[in-house]
Length: 168
Image (cartoon, rainbow, N blue to C red; front, side, top):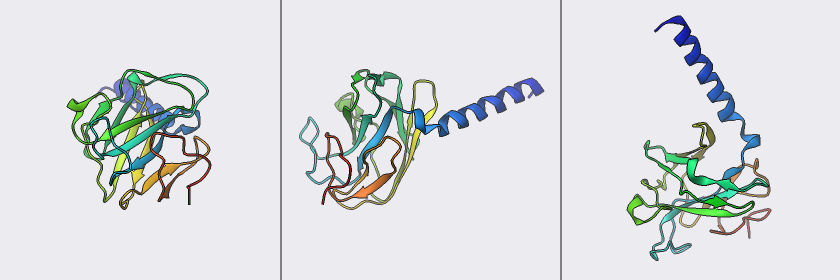
């Protein structure tokens, strides 16, 4: 590889890492993940599939169409081409059956743990989540702020704002 191409590649990788780690400016965030759903939330087909809830944590409308989400298996999907108002959430169904609709992903979540990566329209990682093993209807949730950590919660709130703390 010529020296100039190598330098360009290194600069591109450094920029990708810098942007990928700059989570403070993100607007779309993972707000809730359930990997063992037992009648906690039903999709449009009446099925209790695992889910990933995303929230617009910014004060601007976000167009989801350019975002992608993937898991530890390397499978990924482009998000549905729609807008999300500030504070609004969108539910993604992690059931491995994308033919069931725009919100259904081509992968399932492992209840033993998994990795999720949310990427923006420019190809930069917006968020990387190390999903631990979760029990039935347990969730990894984000409360209060867009930069707050995801925490284990035994009382998820699918398709609704999470509030300031985990419900008792």
